[in-house]
Length: 118
Image (cartoon, rainbow, N blue to C red):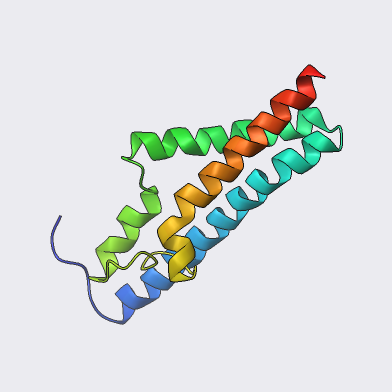
């Protein structure tokens, strides 16, 4: 891959990519948060659907070397490689996102399975 594109169009494109990435992240964060809440509320089918959606995203990440494909797009438009160069998240959250939401997802899955079995 060559050097990043530069100029006003590159800056605008990077903003668009960051907005899209942030919206996608918020969607998956909401799904991960909702799984245990729905399960505990007895909405097991809804929790299972959201769980499957998140698992689909996990497959995408695994196939892309644990990187969001939007990160690859964003890097075409900047030389910045800070942990949040490609998304509008605080640096700490961007840096630890996979650990935090991975742990929450696993905990939610445990709760979901427990609710299905009881």
